[in-house]
Image (tube, rainbow, N blue to C red):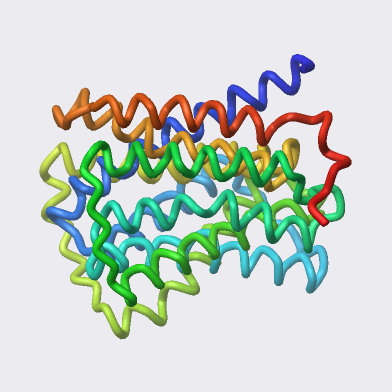
Length: 298
């Protein structure tokens, strides 16, 4: 792998490390704000910060490009987070985490049909299944409880589908402008498309919880690192590695979250989680093998 490839590999790992911590941040913020309030405040602050980083305004390139950016904001911002957050109100957290972890598999399937150079290979399927088993072991962590709830599980699946759609759109997006500008516009359309939901789920606009430094710090982590930094980095990773290979790194998020929870929240880390880690690493390695790219699934 070239130096450039190693650089983007490191960028991918740093991004999933940041995103793995967002579950803990969100858990803390939910003590003060509703799910839709967190979404609104997070992306509003992220948009302002991205405008400060890249204040230039450009003319729209084409109707097609603008439409793709609009749907990227809708799928990768509004729908993804709303479906995931509200799924947690109806289903077990383990169910939601497991279903959302199907995003790399769904992305690989979508990429097979909508992206020219990302065909589904036998090793992609095998590696995806192995990594998914690893994710299941990590999420359940020795306590195998699966309590199905149709509404919650469907919302979690829609969240996973939304991220797959977002990944395909970013890979297909052909723009001459920087990723900073594109990411800022994605945040803008996320804010616009979340507005209709405010009539269903009113926002209190009570900022008194921000007087608590823990609440403020966690909101800043979501806005600065998990949104501004991570979205720009991830969009670059997708453009270099492709939607399928990039999203394979998402398999590491439940494992990293569990490790962080064990350190920060003193939650248990069992043999099953360690076994799951082996499956995840092995699955991602198998999926990423290049020499079998020409062997597509018939």
